[in-house]
Length: 212
Image: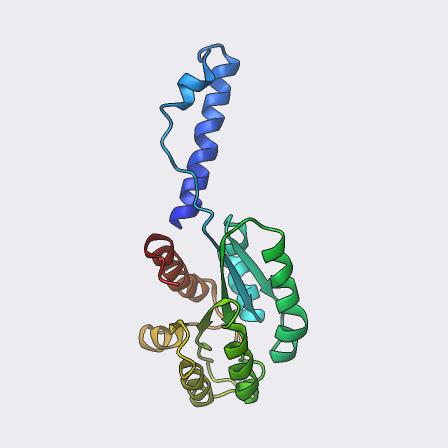
């Protein structure tokens, strides 16, 4: 379980028990009771916005990232570069403007629907990186797909790396460990969980060491 999510559940559980005790008259002094509670208040230094296509939609359905207090998901089926510029970024700006986190990280997972737009992505990500903390994720592999090849995906990922931005290479992990799809493009629950484990590991490392 993600550590931040675990801490939130712990806070809820502790205060639920405390409320029950107080209603029974067992705890008379609220300040005295809360003084002994462990300090598990979540950090508000960071907020994370996942921006992606149907693969992020599927991963959020399985892994419920958007239920974690500091994670947001902006994702839509079949989307690519134009949607990033015209829809996703305005939505991200709205989230940033209306939430109190001090430092935001945008985790980008687009490209599988328009791999030929690599030059546009490179220019846009370079532009965005001047204003936002951008993390790029690799486009992950397909399985016997009729129109998309893993060699084209590998070329796209190599181009993303040239920007020198933080890069999460889940593609290499899946190619090494194996993966499963339901239709050649979208993953099974187990594969989505594995991908998200890697993303959450990066987030947890950032929370502890402020690497982004």
